[in-house]
Image (cartoon, rainbow, N blue to C red; front, side, top):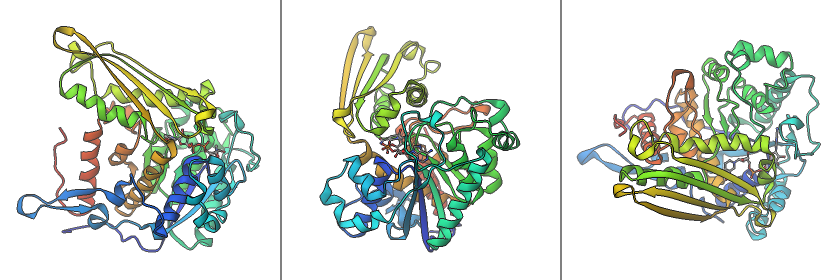
Length: 435
Ligand SMILES: NC(=O)c1ccc[n+]([C@@H]2O[C@H](COP(=O)([O-])OP(=O)(O)OC[C@H]3O[C@@H](n4cnc5c(N)ncnc54)[C@H](O)[C@@H]3O)[C@@H](O)[C@H]2O)c1
């Protein structure tokens, strides 16, 4: 490492999860089990991936933690908020993602993770009816109470730093409203005036996190930090924000497979994606207003990979459809089907079918770990605002749409950006061009 300018990862890292459901209980159980040497953190880039640093004779392949100072699994202390009072052990059992044998060895530690009362508004997720909910005078009071939770958690657990991760249910779609979301002053005013229509509870979590000097990650497709007012707050507090929507199953496949079509200059006439899943996430997404948020996020993937303006013969007017259907028998074991109608030489049609029988939370847990560790790293490296290098992990990468910035969805370009950021933070030369 030549000229690294990153603060060391000393002391405890508090990981405060909004939502103690299937994803976060699987994430926590896996970390605690791995810490005891009883499970492997498979799928986590920060734990497994090796990347090149240096060139020519000086070239070597190192783990991320050998390039930059990352917090270790032993440094992590978990906390959470949830609408339901179940502790992390009960939640892991209820979620039915993991078998008892993979939960019981860390039962005691999980039982100690008891969710704080949620900042919640029933109108944003009408299918949830838990009562572990804060009583708030208005949205500003909601922020104040969350800030106090963060401060208390940090002090009680003797944490050096905190990262806040939203892995709670998807809220209803909140379109960007310039008048309210355009500036920080307008956002604060709306919170004080209790503008419930434009200020989602998730915005209160994000505001509280950034104000307390904590990076904030949006793992659902909510527009929470995807607004200029939050970018302004992140700049003011010098904190990283990342989002949105974990890129786990179908969209991971899509962002990795679409480049095959694009690279070979094949044409696309349609891409139909459908899913069935039966967990609580699926239940919430069965509500059209909540599904709308997910749909917007999932649809954005192809647009910047197979671009009609770049290749009008190949990608003009392709039909892209995404469906999610709630189907209880499958619980967390989601099944996704992709039907891809492509065309080749002289326009002759062909089809590709992909059937991914995945496990939602098993795919999401390592992303939680990587996003948390890399956001903490970004904060220590003095990076703030939108963390584009984390787009690799996200379905609908944040970008400055007010400047017409095009997000990068192409999986392998995202990987190059991720590696370059780590090289840079590690004091190595980044490869300048992303093709
Ligand atoms: N698993 C995946 O593959 C995947 C991929 C992308 C995004 N996500 C998103 O991650 C999120 C979590 O998924 P899950 O399967 O764990 O869902 P889940 O329903 O099991 O857990 C979500 C939890 O959030 C709680 N919650 C809702 N609103 C809250 C609030 N305002 N404050 C505190 N807690 C609140 C709910 O009570 C619930 O326990 C969802 O938004 C989902 O869309 C998951």
